[in-house]
Image 1 (tube, helix red, strand yellow):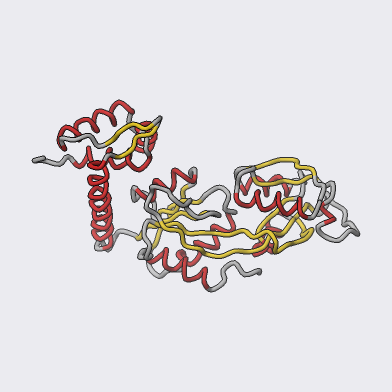
Image 2 (image 1 turned 180 degrees about the horizontal axis):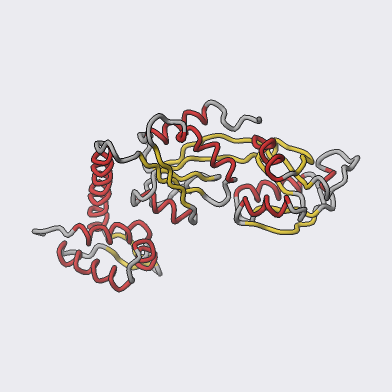
Length: 301
């Protein structure tokens, strides 16, 4: 192998990460035919096959694993080089590219990012919303510096990322002041027969809420489900039903959405994580976010 084409290596790296030419082509904005052609050229240069097909997935061969380990180091060093060059340019502002899952409340995301906003000097944050798996891929490809999520990276994932626990808080139920009369029944019995707005089934918070409602035998009526937390709160503000939110943000939610607290519980905990491509945090903004979390940024206000 006399000459290494780094473009071919990048396409191989993306396919190895995601186990699919189709998925890699979507992330790289190229056609599957282009990706497949580049892989063939790399295999010809290497002289051995890099993948074997198992069902619908492409699995690395022994040679493929060897090439993948070197590719991972090469692109990690390339990212460090680019960052080092950017840091030496006095006119270039520091940038934090952060992905935020839709299940993280926008107010929580702002609170978690506030320590980065308070850093001295010129600093810019780029916030991106995508699917959870796509954002993990963005970390692996060094397109993102950080992902804020309500769940850690799943165990056994083939993407080299690390989850850092930031904090947790209980759950409060809110309702529109003019739409709901106060009941004499204690909470959570006061939720009986109300219209409930909940996160979509399958999310971390929804699983906890379903178990909690069953355990307390609260006969609520599920009115609507939402992927996006901000949309859920907007429906609650307009009186569509009772909705849950982080207890640490009670004051902000009541003020912003003109709602009142119906009750709260510590049996349903919302947990928040920073997911990074590095075990030891280096980016100054990410370090600031992590240190602030340890100082109880999720404490009730």
